[in-house]
Image (cartoon, rainbow, N blue to C red; front, side, top):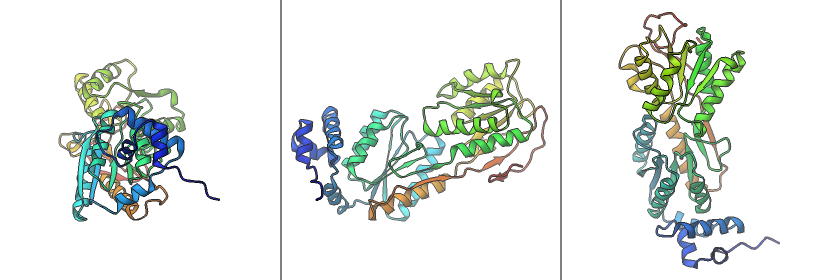
Length: 352
């Protein structure tokens, strides 16, 4: 005999709220108090309640609107992802509503609720460092969700990102092949899943080369100025690294400013490799070597997975990890030696 399904009335009773309040939570309506919403979701989780009938009703009234949640639109990676997703949406007669979390989990949760109140058909989320509250609510909403860029080791929802650990291994091996032995990896925070994976890849390559004791991981802060101030003493120390690998565009800008303050030349005094490739890396000489994230492919996979879930909401969660190629330019050279300018060369996994 099949087990009796829990009703929304039982959830409301356990949570100590009205039936209407519980219904509003599962319909994504705004105006429900935070504490009441929390109690309803916790009661639903405890009772194993899944609002399938409500979700089916929502799917019959498609709005052809997608919600996109990003930390900010000033970060070039997020900006590119937004542009690619909007282009795909336009080509398929969908609208995209873009909201920003500003790295604030509470703001993220509120902005997602606002999107739900607009009856979006699905969500693409680049999450904050702690999006547990948002994730918990999304599990009960039964709305298609794809996690983009900042993924975890195990994601409940489908996810799309680059293979961050493999990318930093590739970059570190490139610097080692040039003869560098004292390397520093500069990252703003390891609390983000993708940043932690980048550190993991860097350290794995250094361990494999027997140089773990010469690997430095610097965590100077979240801003360009904090990075400059934190890296400068390392660059001016008696035993300084001969190469720096930056884990984000903010870290790259901060390190470049620290190099200027230290009166150093790239690549004669220091090799520099950046994670994330942007147009400004080839504006001034020397052109900066970089790991390039395939943002167009990332956006394409996220869109494909999301729209497939409209027709098959119970399909198994798909997790995509893409390779990120190394673009060698003028800022990576053998330690202590200048190198003539060279044309950009894309390396898809093999060292030069």
